[in-house]
Image (cartoon, rainbow, N blue to C red):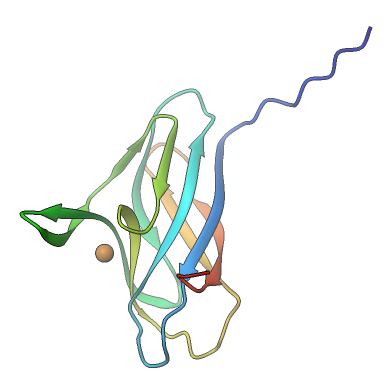
Length: 128
Ligand SMILES: [Cu+2]
């Protein structure tokens, strides 16, 4: 009797990547995504870049003594997965001109032990 199994997932899988749409004139925003690591060993995300943005970095939002703060992350070690979401880890984007009304932007993930990975992030309203 045939037994069908889904193919095992391989490599690094990125899902639900999106960039927060900002009002006209605001060029700083953030991107979010879920990164799943199927390589069988920890991978380290060391940098994030976007051709169209002036500066991109990894941040983590925290509440310290009742104050919302953002902490810079030099690297993110991903054992099984990493979730970038509002109010937590996020990809901070400075100086992105969104006046072209693009539906999506390319974000490049750089790893220290994996080839870099291009991700298409859809532009989305934060409250959608
Ligand atoms: Cu930030």
